[in-house]
Length: 329
Image 1: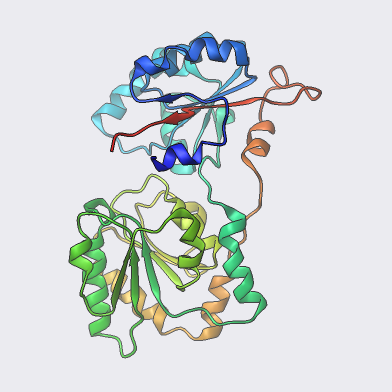
Image 2: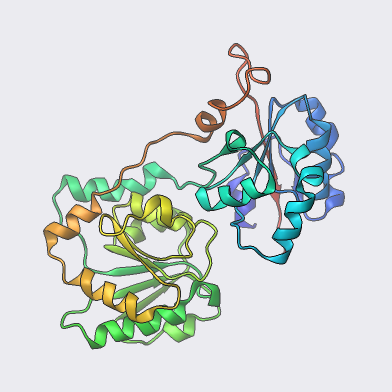
C-alpha cells in the first residue's frame, strides 16, 4: 500500500483516484457533504476547478499552492489570464510563506485573501528530543545531517565537494550523516566522514534529528522544505541554501543558522568550519534560538473564515481536496 493511502486511511469519507474519471462522483459527494469550507489543491485538475466554481457563494473556497515566483514564461502568461481563469475559483489562497505570496499577489490575489502556514511538521513529535536534551542539560551533538532525496536538485554533489573541502582544512571535522534515497546515493557512499543511512520512515525522523546538531540543506530549488521546520523544532541549527523557501521564515543568520549561495561550495565549507569551531555554549544557544507556536490548521482557517460561511453555533466543516491520490508503483 502506498504511504499516502496509509496516511489517509483514518478518513471514512474519502475518494481514492488514479485518473480524472475516478472523480466523477466528487460533485454528488460534495453536494451531500455540503462543506462550509472547501480546500482544494491548485488549479491544474479539471474536476477541482469544476467543483470550485459550483460552490461559489455556497462555501468559503480556499486554494492551496506552493509555487514560488520565478518569472518563467508560463508564470508570466498566467498573470494575464488569472483574472478570468483563476481568481473566480477561490476566495482565499493558502500558502507556505512569503515567497509564494509574491506569486499570489502577481496573480491578482489581494493581501487579505492570502493565508500563511500551509506546510507544517508534527511539532509535538519533533520537539520532544530537543526538550529532552535541554532538560537533561546535554551538549549539542557535533555532527551534520542531510535529510532528503539523493537527486540532482538537492545538490548532494555540491554538499560532497563542500564537505571534502571542509575535512581537508579542519583539524577535528564533524561527521556528515546522510539519510535518504535516490539515484546519487552511490556518490556519497564510502567517502571519508560520511555515513549514508538510507531512507527514513516518517515515524523515525525525530530519532534521526536527535542524532545530529546541524541540518545542511543545499537544495537548488525548494518551494518550502518542511525538513527545515522539523529540524528547527528538534533544536538543530540550520545551514541552508538561499533557494530554500522556508529560509526567510525559519533561518536567521547568526541566530539559529546560516545561509549560503546555491553554488558556493567554498562558502558552505567555510560555514561548516565556523560551526564546528564553536564551543558548547554557543552551539547550545543557537539550538535554543527558535520556538514555534502550536496553532492547528483548523485554528488558522477558522480564524479567517467569513462568518457568513461559518457560524459560531455550527462551526466549520472541512473538506480537503485532494482527499487522496493514489500513485502507481
